[in-house]
Image (tube, rainbow, N blue to C red):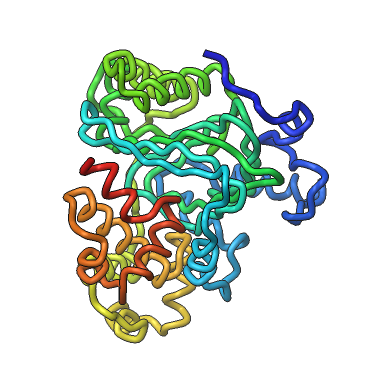
Length: 352
């Protein structure tokens, strides 16, 4: 099924993966020489030795003085405008795999990560987003790939965008990769490009996404989604063995502490003492290896743990208290800044 193009041809054409749209002052665009330098740096930094090679590449996009969480919470306070929507639904045949269908004209995602892949396509309009140290413009016919723990954001460009997204687990993607390779000793699929212009792949994915969203022919949707993932892996991924998250030393210790004690009011001084680093050094090292500050990483953990509890049907207020948020309002702001929906809507998608 061809993708719907409800935006003007001029808008769709100018929003390509390689050049910025014109006619808007929302985003400061690089000069041609800066763009060339950036591309060369990106290619060098994206050398696929392991997944952690891509982490920390957002330093030049998010300066050290920027408080990512405050920015995200401020953006999340903006309610959806008339005509905007965001809906999460799940597929029981894929062990509750999550899908998102959304249209945004104002909502902006805070920089965040997922523990899963994030694979999807733009159906109309244009989104500007950052991942792996790059600024990109996604429009109809583009397919986007975020690996687990890739730091990324997203905001509407010009009039906004409509898109469909899915969040397959590492295990599912490895299963598909092994099936394609005909053997079990394959690595987690690695997509060298965070975005590709592939109208055929976008159409295959969008058709499967719509079938699963509609729910009337689940077998067709199930087959279609597996076909879409297999298509993307076969055409755009490398299956060499790689590891996810190879941070070493102090940063690995800090991550372990944050994961284990996410519901506590940890101080930076306490984390730094455990790592044996000065506080300012810890912040720089942590951001360099993960792409987030310790505080931003902690809030991300809390949101992920909140998702687990909401899937089980726990009330948002109780979830906020159990996951380290000072109240439900703080949970809602952080949750919506990363997922585009409120905790209540997310819970309803999983509990009916």
